Image (cartoon, rainbow, N blue to C red; front, side, top):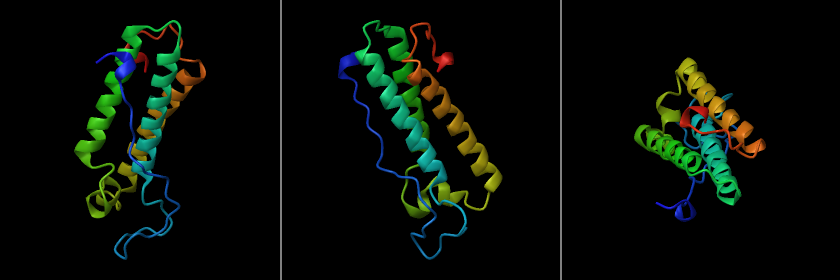
Length: 134
């Protein structure tokens, strides 16, 4: 698909402040959508980075393709494990009692987001040539 025709969309998920959505959702001091909020933040930064690359005068098709590839992988991962699923089907709900696993997943998502943000702030430097750099 041509770079100009790529469309980026992210699910409408916002960071939760700990409110209960059902009477069965536990952990009153934890955000109930930590993983989905972190994943959405990553997808949002992917979208911003892609927009910046598309507007760049030094458009490198290899970087644009690598960025698109990683974005699609992120969406596939999120879909396959139910990151944005509703209520009890969500990954946040299913691992609600496993704080160590949740911290690990959120930590990895934060690393991805921070890495993308650093590229965004550097306006996706032309030297970024491989998906390993993402």
